[in-house]
Length: 350
Ligand code: 5AD
Image (cartoon, rainbow, N blue to C red):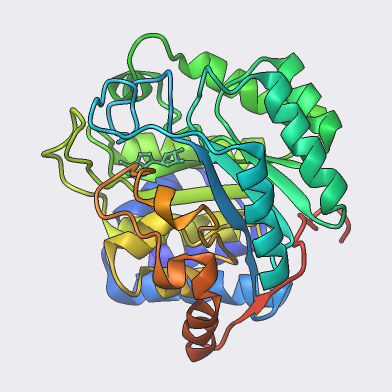
């Protein structure tokens, strides 16, 4: 019952050694896993109560200059019908979201060369002007430090950039040469220095990923202290080089999510769309494992099916902003409720 002691230690000290993380990740015992989830759930309940924060996700462009082997909107996929939302459309999405109760908007997109810094800066400024009580989160990939500063000064408060995998060889297995793991980490450092609430994270079960790699991810996230942690299973997309590969496992994803919760009690951790796609109760299972955020889709329904990062990506029903009632009912059924607060990171104040 060594593992139980490790879980207690993680909850108390918020960190473990590499060897100890490895033991937890290798543990298959169901008592031990439910104990881990229970501890993580309690930790989240004690900080946030039964509130789940909502973020309106607007997928602003599916054009991308990158060619990541796992991603459906990679540049090399000719079957994608490409789009970029106009500023007017984005603002209309925000308006609709605002009325539904959203106080955070997430502009997510590929690294679209047609989307200039100036355009993004002005779009952020417009959202900021029209919805001054809302948080603006960007998830637009790698930029220069100057560009991140411009967006920040225009009113963006948060930035999501998963490191995807900390191990350099593994990173190169997932991304073609023009992307470097060093530059990605540099971006994360800049974002933090500039003052963004910064989110990073990983996919679980990508081809070539080992327990050793996941331990490296845990140690990185322990050190980096992100305000937000995004974690979801890898799910193959039929038009990518990883088409035939197996999806990541629900169990390993939930295990990591719970470890992250115990490591960073105040972190904002979404129960991701990929989890909800992997299993019909995936969203609830994420919450019960310690997640405290959901990100319903606010994109125009007619573009939603074109933002296909992986096969069968959930974008409707409880995964969509217009399905908020359904989502709310499903969360109520497990004892949680939607919070319409902004849900900023609160760990520094207490
Ligand atoms: N399966 C799961 N997640 C994926 N992402 C991209 N492609 C996939 C896939 N095939 C995730 C990446 C990225 C986020 C926006 O979506 O982690 O950072």
